[in-house]
Length: 79
Image 1: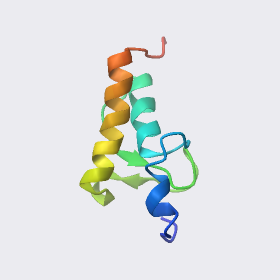
Image 2: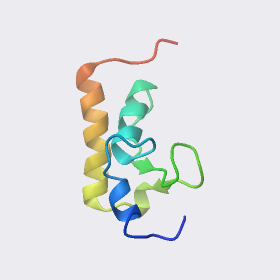
Image 3: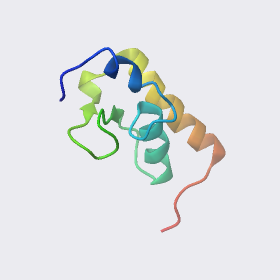
Image 4: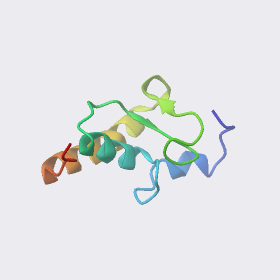
């Protein structure tokens, strides 16, 4: 994981940022994946993800918010 900076303690909560907690939650629902809280500090699938065991309760809640909103909207990829 990259060295944490002040910016990195905030970017995971930027809901418009690719790879953020909210983004990953929504993407997991879109692709019909089970809940698996994580995020990518360097953007989706760039570098190493920060996984569930490394997340704070607030970070897990942010991931779940993204998943919940996507689930409520109901849109999923058609395979």
